[in-house]
Length: 394
Ligand SMILES: Cc1cc2nc3c(=O)[nH]c(=O)nc-3n(C[C@H](O)[C@H](O)[C@H](O)COP(=O)(O)O)c2cc1C
Image (cartoon, rainbow, N blue to C red; front, side):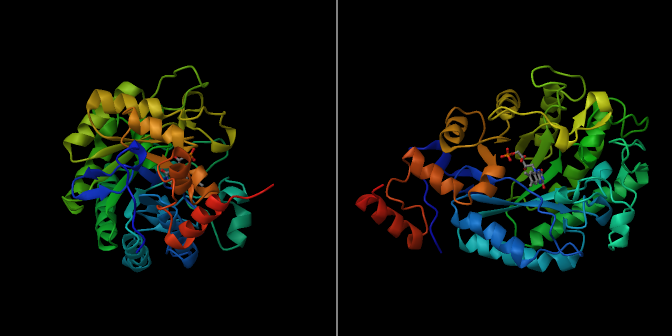
């Protein structure tokens, strides 16, 4: 096993403990769907090497992409699943490897709700239609909190009955059990980005009149029931995270809109913490006021570096609950400042991790946390240190 070096000088490379799990550093691979699972939702060797790269790239925690709790909740036919016991074994092989490398293995639970039944991004990201049916990938009717189409032209979802909501709570519970059996250390419940759980939270999308709608207590009910069920199944010594959209997507980058607000996130975070949630994973967006529906990823506006960090900072300071910051965290010095300034407890790196699987090790070297390349696997680090000493001439 390659050892995971930590540092007392650099906040980003200092260890961090929640319940019985010690994170070797503060850097987490953000959950990122790859849309290339087997049709039965099983993890493949391709995924294995995809995650394994980050274990040797210095990330303390590797979080899986969204694992679907129910096939109806899949975004695409390429989604990874956790609805079936047969999906446990390939995930277990992955967690064993991550543990052997001294990494923390995290899994994300998910249901796409109104955004289910669509094409993979590079196939168009639209709803599944006749062409896909011909290829053996017919569309299906999504389920959501209300029967309102999210993006014009997309499948109109069916409204979940309260009985079906209770059944889904049990699916989350069973999924948490499978995640435990697969050997993960951390569980993250995805309740952001306009997907099923977020669609219940937001007053823009949730116009239900029953106990799962109405005021914030009603709109939070489904998520809180999911958390209670998952926490019962998830061991006491393992941390539970919840990813939320701290605010609904703004109309433009500098103007607040109505919808779910940061004050609502304070209320929710308190309720989550009271139910044994250890950390709020702070994202934003996914529901847009002017559309009464989805914020379509292809139509988004540019964002600033670290644009969601202020939400992680505000929740951490106001609710006194640990947070993870995510979104356009690009380089080591930026990530170091976020942790050192107490804006968040962990940082999640998404697209920069796709671009550079050694992002964490490169961040350590550029910050001066690892001047001798000792954090690198020795079979790489020995050579990189020697080359740096000898130098390269232009
Ligand atoms: C390819 C890709 C897939 C994603 N899939 C998920 C996902 O499965 N679950 C989730 O919560 N967020 C998902 N996201 C959002 C990321 O976790 C992250 O919040 C977002 O990319 C912003 O971070 P970044 O700027 O570092 O990429 C995905 C993002 C990308 C680029």
